[in-house]
Image (cartoon, rainbow, N blue to C red):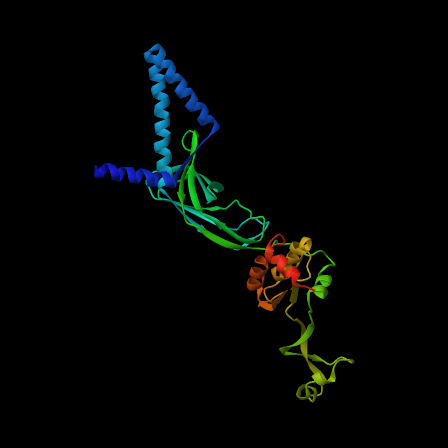
Length: 315
């Protein structure tokens, strides 16, 4: 009795981590099998019984082989930073832990009770490992979450897709869309968002003759007294870090996403800079690319109550 209960518990557990999606061809195969079985019982012909046996054996073989495929493959993920509207730079790492090759392996996300395919491997050698690029694009910025991942296969006959579900939830921040600024629009963005000043920075070890009209305070006395005329240290232009200002109290709901994309464009162009975010709660400054883009990604969307609160707190 105890052994029966253990087997029943194992069956219940497997039913929670195994799913089966029958294909159109699979439905026709099942209908044909059932119809032929009824016909065989009606006429009692041994040849028909034999054909029915072959059909049933095909179903059993398909179930056994597909279970071996999804049970013997280990999966890991190498995730990079996600950007809205751009294909992910993620990788799926598959490892075959058996002495037999595996075929038709599909990896997907498990979210809201559904399977979303992100990678496919037609063939995996015995005792080998392979890296596959993820085929997925996340359309919107913000927090993207999932309930787990699944290993699936339609091997060997394509009657159904059998899935092994690994309920390992997670989430990631999706940065705003990457968009290049239009030519001639960059200075407009600078003046609209903040200030950027060009300074001159001295280059150590480099000197040159003084040019009339330059600042005489830069003349090097020691070098000039050697009889070669006034000399100054060479200088190069230095660009101060940009300052991007986003006032959520004044942004119209329909223009919010466009403003966020424009603000994010500056931080995609260079690593340094400050994001100044103005809300009803006050002013906050975020320094550096990662902190600024994470903040822009998490700004409440125009259809959320948080954004309405910002609007009410504005002028």
